[in-house]
Length: 238
Image (cartoon, rainbow, N blue to C red; front, side, top):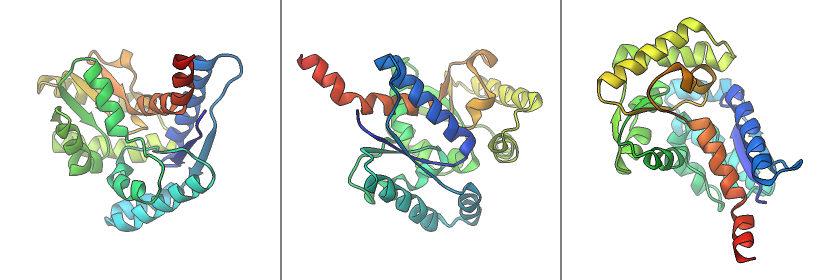
């Protein structure tokens, strides 16, 4: 079993979900009392948010790259950045280490394509919805990307930072998100990426008719598969 290195705390609310999903996945795959080998570097989210607001992406990259190096030095065999937004510095994080970074967009695209979908809506922070690092990577892999109108993007962003990252799950905010998803459907979306790892705390598949793609769960499942890839090979050889 390979050791999974998590760059978390971005926010810790969703990092806790990563820890749960990865360990549940490992137990489901191996049975018994098996759990994952995990190293977690938990950032101070306030410091990272301050850099985001200032547009200080080089400084933010340095923070996450340092975390990645520490995880590699501790024995991690892979790196996960436990947030969608901070994949804006995924290239810098990967360049800082010799072990692979499992990119959240790539794991999500694989799941979307397995469902045969092409036109996909994206919910996330404004950074994720508006900057090129995320939606362009989706487009490069053959997906048509649909994002909400500006007023909806502002509201999605504010709910993430003012509520979800603080563990506040409000019925009225859920209703706002589901209404936005319906508007994306009207624009042609065949499914929706929950492109912020806190959004799945609020929105579940039962809340909407369109297929949703929980990036937290998908990323965690990819980590489990990677961590067990050697065991799978060994079983096939046997």
